[in-house]
Image (cartoon, rainbow, N blue to C red; front, side, top):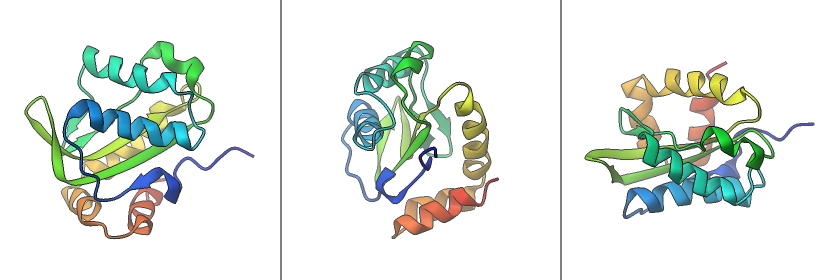
Length: 144
């Protein structure tokens, strides 16, 4: 049976992050520690950010690896990092980081689901203000 894409272990609330690189490394490290990706994937997440920002608006960034990082993905998974203080992404404040690792083309479906959740300003505030990991899980489980 495939691993769950998002578990409580993949969520961090109240993260204090000082810069974009630290934020991306932190988001990727969760995927590594929970065995979704090999450690080399984190470098590919940073490489992706150099090519084009993963900031999508609404205080959200979706760090993910480059196309050639596919081989480093063991299982499709998400990490969610909430930083109420925010971190600077090239002049944009990011409070929600969603790390993605997708086998095959699964990341495209996941991205569209995340976009639906994050397009709603009310959901953004609920995510930023979440006091439990369950609240985060619930918001993302509503998107089918």
